[in-house]
Length: 171
Image (cartoon, rainbow, N blue to C red; front, side, top):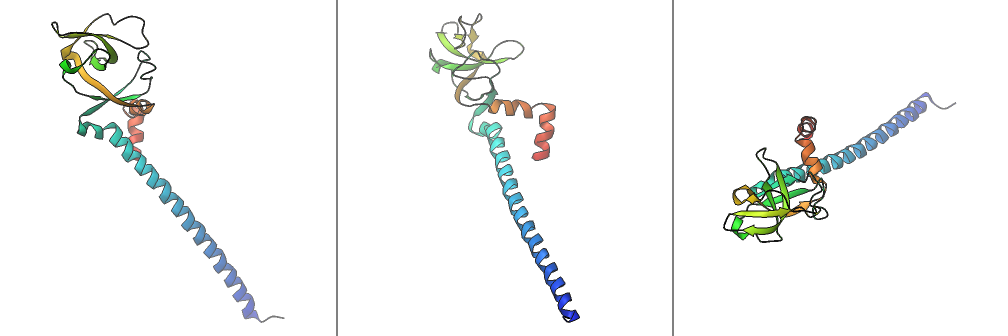
């Protein structure tokens, strides 16, 4: 019959081994969590820069809401628009402008420039006809510099109430 102390040592050793395994799993889980949270923080920072930080360098983001400029710009794209002098805009340039009194913003391509009356004639790439009303130089916001596909959906979501709550929770 083995001495009573050896049973206690075996039980104690088994408990220590189980404790080490739990600690090892706990460390692994903590490392995975730290990696995931680091990636999430990085993505939130990149998203903040993409949506807000670009304003520092003179770009304004706008979401494409219609297919009038496809295939150049698709619905859901996020356009980065730079302010330009209206006299520098040429036929063939896409421009972003205020469309009407409700301050709807659109991006269409310039098909004619009337310097005498200070207005552009525009047309969406996917549209058959020119836009009915000319765009006055004063309504020009700028020209798109680049677009990020689908990021406009994210931008539109975080500007809506449910999206704001999610952004605040993760921010």
